[in-house]
Image 1 (cartoon, rainbow, N blue to C red):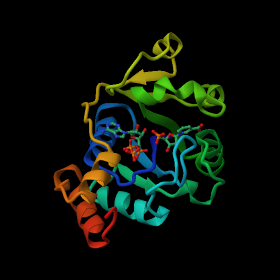
Image 2: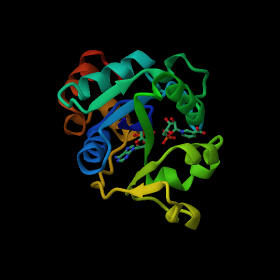
Image 3: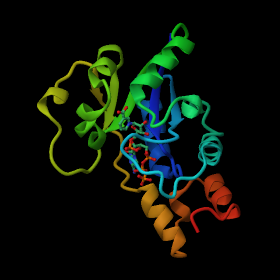
Image 4: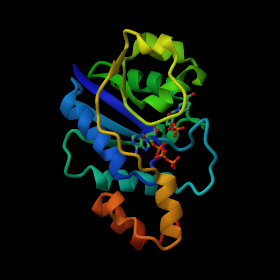
Length: 194
Ligand SMILES: Nc1ncnc2c1ncn2[C@@H]1O[C@H](COP(=O)(O)OP(=O)(O)OP(=O)(O)O)[C@@H](O)[C@H]1O
Ligand SMILES: O=C(O)c1ccc[n+]([C@@H]2O[C@H](COP(=O)([O-])O)[C@@H](O)[C@H]2O)c1
């Protein structure tokens, strides 16, 4: 059975930090593939300046086209919003459970608030979590530090954010090196975040 790491996010837009993490996971852990799950609406986020699902999907699609082990996923597009990860995992298991074993990929910062996710205990009961380092305030709880289902992967730290890209692109700053080239082209041609 293939091991798939699910990388959930709004990807508004996908940037080189996301791509470097996903690629690192697939090259340096036992995961066979990483799927970018484009979330229509994250439970903890506002819809403000959020591009349409299909545009965010298209940018992920273009970013990973030369990376055979990285795939975009629209699985959440037809699920109720906001999108709770536990519900998406049930859906994925029903659809692909015979073929793939699903794990989650998340940064240390997200692990810190993981206990606030809907039914996080259920997620941990059925899935492994691959955690990469991130700069953040505070500490993760001890429970998660030694949890047998939580695996740490020493991926590089890339402190770039989509918010920074959107904001500075709007101000006319050059943010091109922070985006995979086809994403930059698409974003520029479509006049996104202006
Ligand atoms: N530079 C980065 N390095 C590692 N992980 C990141 C980085 N930027 C975002 N992430 C993580 O990747 C996942 C997907 O990112 P998402 O698009 O939802 O957030 P974001 O880049 O922080 O966007 P925004 O700035 O719009 O809130 C999230 O779990 C987020 O914490
Ligand atoms: O299921 C939940 O309760 C839940 C709460 C917060 C975040 N998530 C997932 O984690 C992803 C990244 O979260 P965020 O807030 O860093 O964008 C988001 O796109 C969701 O898929 C999921």
